[in-house]
Image (cartoon, rainbow, N blue to C red; front, top):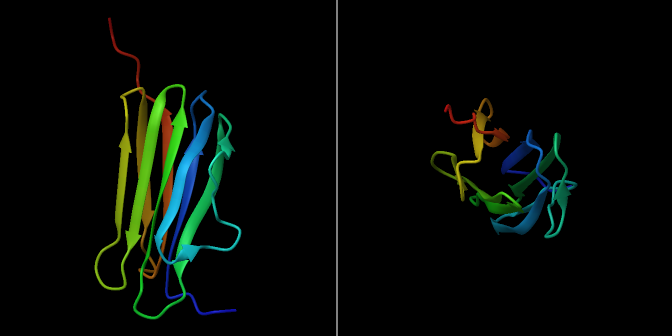
Length: 127
């Protein structure tokens, strides 16, 4: 088993009533972690969670990737980068304000970052 030098593991929690479908997923640098690859067309049912992640097994290379999720309510994109040198970056964007996304990043081990991303309905507008 090869040595893992950098890794990112993301748990996406769908706390909405929408079905999320993976519309695009790619590792930019590194490779998908074993058993944590995500594929186009995969579904994340309402009130469920799914882990995915990438890693680098090459010295002096980081781990970077993105996942784009679609639903009847719009799109959600997550892009992460754990470079060999430098700070971890996580960019989350969405196509509307129907959801709110909260993230918690654990960098206790800077070479192996864990992220919890919780997608929940936005608070209803007051009348």
